[in-house]
Length: 379
Ligand SMILES: [Zn+2]
Ligand SMILES: [Zn+2]
Image (cartoon, rainbow, N blue to C red):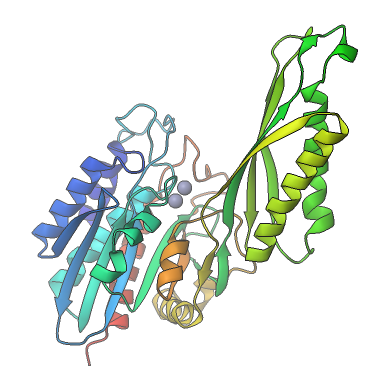
């Protein structure tokens, strides 16, 4: 497993942003080629699929690791910290990729399975939906998979524990930019202006009633106003105000309802102030919905692998988002979490001091080997 650690730390030093993971893609492809895999490159630009066949069973499995990094300036001070200023593996995708490469090696050495393994190394999980782009490039036509699996490290979950969930596990994400179009002027003469700041403040407050008053209390959803930008000087009423929203949901009808209500609230509030709004509403990743049989399979394996006391079903889905959703729309499968907690005060994912917990590398590596071998059990 020393190799897996070295791989992880190498990847950590050379992070690349989604869809420009050229060096990472080369590195991964070269490694897999040397292990004897049939390697296909270029799906979604930088995506890599490595295929290994053994025996004559028509069965097949896909395992996905993501390999993109984030636009964050690393502050860990580690001796293997990012050598690329402003780019950082702050979500542990370096760990995910290292574990799947480690598993690739063991699977190729042991050849203890009957069927076809497709290892899917995916770009751009964080931003451009690399999973969807790989599917559009023919991922599952070129590499038919009976089922697909993926894991994510989680520094909030006890080390070595495995968290699964049948059905919804990660939310759909949409983004919306609302621009309030006012009429600027002198701060001392508000009666001669249409103040977009006051109107914008009303919109923000009214948006808070959508989840609490319009959406069913048992349908999880979030509307966060993550940015509000207007004006610069105390004595100037600006021409416009802008706000940016992040919207999370699971149910497709709720997702539509959220958009419809956000538009109605923004337009209605603005109209009451005699102003108009421009709304740019962008649908992002769909909700990640795990399939039952494959989730049962992961849970059963996890129990025999780690012990029942280390395996649990998440009581509720997470409100974060994940583009593995698109693979689960195309194929049955399951997405789950591997606990990597060090201490109660671990920096969270996407934090400039986050660092993937290397102690989890042998666990994830071995788990992938066992998962593939059990799924394609040689009779
Ligand atoms: Zn992330
Ligand atoms: Zn991630």
